[in-house]
Each structure stands twice: as structure tokens, then as C-alpha cells.
Length: 286
Image (cartoon, rainbow, N blue to C red; front, side, top):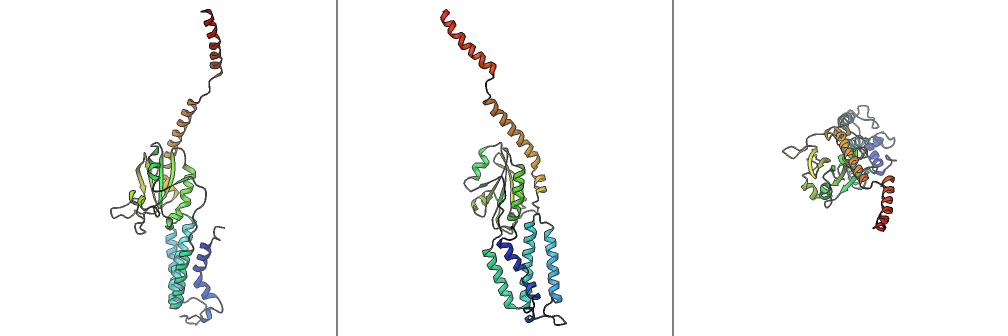
């Protein structure tokens, strides 16, 4: 069902467009070729070279991919780039047509957003400050993201899984769309520029104040390279330790609530009844 969504169906056809045209009988017969045997229905040496180079780039990019979405995204992206080069090399008109189709697909077919289970609170520009400062005992991990960022879209499922595993009364997870709320981007110094590579950014808040963030930012305003895997996040943000401390805080709160509403023991009730019976008798004696 996930792969049958319009974005992936359209991307699949766009990724194999040149292969389909070059190998389809009746269509490939009308194409030009540089092969020595003159066979227009097979790749020439330059086309094979371009495809091999594409495969090498995809393998290098996928080494840092952490989700299936990222793997597919890299394959789709570089396949389209290779198709553009191959079509322009084959025929200028076909190259322009394919490039136009790519732009149309990019404008009309957006990658599907993560819609699975999560324990995440979404902030706006008006609510984020109040929520972070409301209770100083609560530790917040907030993701600054933008819906148009492929990296943020790929990271959504990882962040959701972490929220399901570690969310508790004293440790909470939040998100704010700085592509939509530009003031939040400036206030918390998270750049939305694709060149800065600061999206997504994870920031740890305690007592309403920033404690740490990943990725870190250098003096030039560019993010220091960092991989958003669940292992890295758990280690860098000490999630296991934070979770254990937050659970203790939660237990203390529960005990305090129980002591406030503790029922009166039966012995105390009987003693109170006896006292009430003795009180009228003492008045009569007087």
C-alpha cells in the first residue's frame, strides 16, 4: 500500500523511462545509436558508463541512509538525474520533454508524510515558549523541521519511534514547522536554507533553556555532519538516563497524589464514632 501511493508510482515510471524506451521493440527502432553493430535497442558504451556512475553514487549515498524512504529517495533522485542526461544526449527534444515531466511531477506529486503512531506535541509560534517554560521539571526534545525537506520527511518515522519508546511525564517530545513559522526559526537560530544543512535539528530543553542541539553549527552557520540514527540520538542525548530520571519523578508525583487523597483507616473511623458518642454524655453530666 505504501509503494502504491501516487508519488512512488510516478517516480518509478520516471526512473525507468529511458530504459523502457531504449528496450521497447517498435520504439527503440527509431532511436539513434553509437553502437558499432548499429543495434538501436541496446545501450552504447557511453550510456553504460553513465549508468555505472549512477550506481556508484547511489551506493555511496545509501551508506548514510537510515530508513527505507531515504534509500528509495536516493535511488529515485539520481535515477531521474541520469535519465535527464541520457535523454538530452539522445535527443534535445526528448530531454526537454522529460525535464518538463519531472518538474510537473515534482509540483503535483509530493512524498507521502508519515502518518503512524507517535507521542509528539506539535507547537506553533504562539505556543512553543509557553510549553517549554510551563513546568521546569519536564525535559523537552524538540525537532525543528520543514515539510518540504526530504531529510525531515525521512526522519519522521525514526523520531516517532523514539517518542513511543521514551515519552513519559518528565520527558516529552515536540515538533515545530519552521518552514511555516519563520519567527521560530530566527528565535531559536535554526536556518531553513538548504545550504546550511540544519534541517532537521534536534534541541534538548531543560527548565525552558536550551542544553544541547544536533547537528551543531560552525562559525560559518553550516551544520557539522551528523547522522540522525536512533542509536546516535539515544547516545548523544542520553535518553536512557533521562528516561530513568523522568520515571522516578513520575513515581514521586504519584506518591504525593496518593498521600493527599489517602482514605481514612477503619480504626480511625471507629475512634471518631466513639468520640462523637462520648461527647453528648459529657454534656449531660455537666
